[in-house]
Image (cartoon, rainbow, N blue to C red):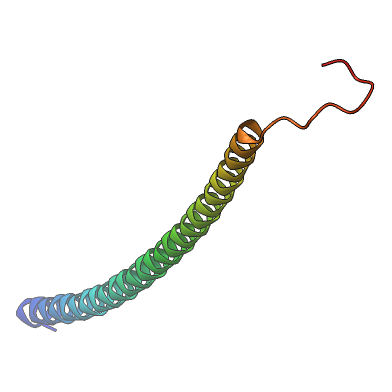
Length: 107
């Protein structure tokens, strides 16, 4: 084989190798891109789940606070009603005339 043919064969082998490496790099790049897309979808799903969990917890907390406020208002209202009844009873007792003294008691 002449030197020119040998150099031509060597150049052809180098070109084929370069093409193969380029195709492998493109395949690897596509795999990395697919993995990145999958990771982004996983992160998006996790963020949506976290947001829903936080929203549910906030709703539950608001309902708990509302129930506690309603209970507190009812307790205060009952205490105020009891206090008003006690004041009215004391006022009625104070306004009632004193009972006459029984016989034999000092006046």
